[in-house]
Amino acid sequence: MENNKVTISVIKADVGGLCGHTLAPDELLEACEAVLEEAVDEIILDYYVTRCGDDIDLIMSHKLGCDNEKVHGLAWKAFEEATKIAKELKLYGAGQDLLSDSFSGNVRGMGPGCAEMEFVERKSEPIVVFCCDKTDPTAFNYPLFKMFADPFNTAGLVFDPSMISGFRFEVHDVVGHKKVFLDTPEEMYMLLALIGDYEKYAIKRVYRRRDNEIAAVVSTEKLNYIAGEYVGKDDPVAIVRAQSGFPAVGEVLEPFANPHFVPGWMRGSHWGPIMPVGEEDATPTRFDGPARVIALGFQVCDGMLIGPNDLFADRGFDKAREKALEMADIIRRMGPFQPHRLPATMMEYTTVPKVLEALEDRFIPLEGLELIEEGGITRKDRGDVE
Ligand code: F6R
Ligand code: MG
Ligand code: MG
Image 1 (cartoon, rainbow, N blue to C red):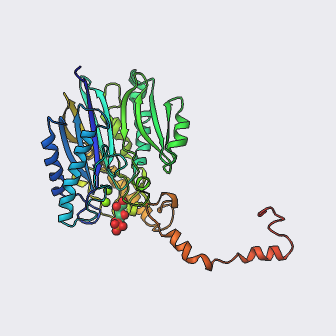
Image 2: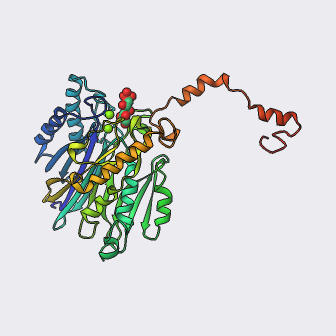
Image 3: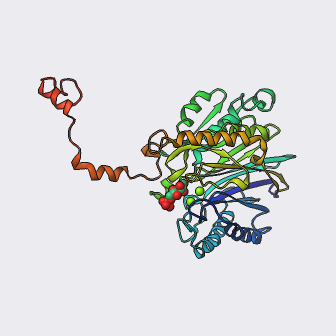
């Protein structure tokens, strides 16, 4: 039977930067393009290769469904070819996101990040692909909530009858490795109770409740958990379907007009604003940032990717960029102090345990407490200790 569904796969990896962690150079993108070009009509229907900072993003359309071995293998091969060049040029962090020497069926858990969705193409199928650098997948919690659950952002939630029944959020507990589905508008407060906590919860998918159609998907692989040690922040990608019963393209982009704070930035260990930019400006250099997000609009047409339209290149986002830079100035002043610095559990790497180890023998009891104990009121009396 003819498969009437199309799959969009966005698979990303950082396989080397020029210089430091700032940019995946053209040579690497070209290497990936050559591999994907070979696979047109064999594995994929169409592709577009882009970058955000030091991450290469392979945007592919095909008929093989999500988690397909051939498609994932193709992405892996593209990253391997790019890695060869990265190593030849001694680019920084060459091959860093390919955590294994060999591919074993799926890129998940092997370093690259991946967002995929399969759907029956509508009469007209506008999608927006977001690619980020210097942040992590929770960067999408706030904008996806606004797109699909906030009527002050998305007028369609109020005025489009096909959206009035709301959306279903698939939320992942990325630490506990479990998931929960929450329906808006009814369960909005419970949803917020979870997704406002970037340490633990990430929105993985959003569905339209009326017909369970997939509306959005985010890459939520966390490299630091996968590898058990620091190997690079999992700069995320996302796909969002737009218009005719989904938020309009402008509603999909609107949450980024007022930049929010995300974890990431320098050493994956700082809060900072996420700045919406066109492809040309996806070059994070100030304090290795601030975090960037690009938004590429495509029309999917019989499985082909028409476009992209570089949506954040629009002057309409100039002010958002200015605001993001102001927010960057303000929070940078805090240097190594919170709230610029992330809490210990969210830092990509930290010397604090080593500092504590080195100081172990130098910590002495607080004098005040000794005096209290000498004066007869012991900590035990107060119930502070057993
Ligand atoms: C953040 C990032 C960079 C690096 C930083 C130090 O995600 O990639 O900010 O963490 O440039 O890099 P290393 O430890 O490789 O010197
Ligand atoms: Mg990097
Ligand atoms: Mg990166």
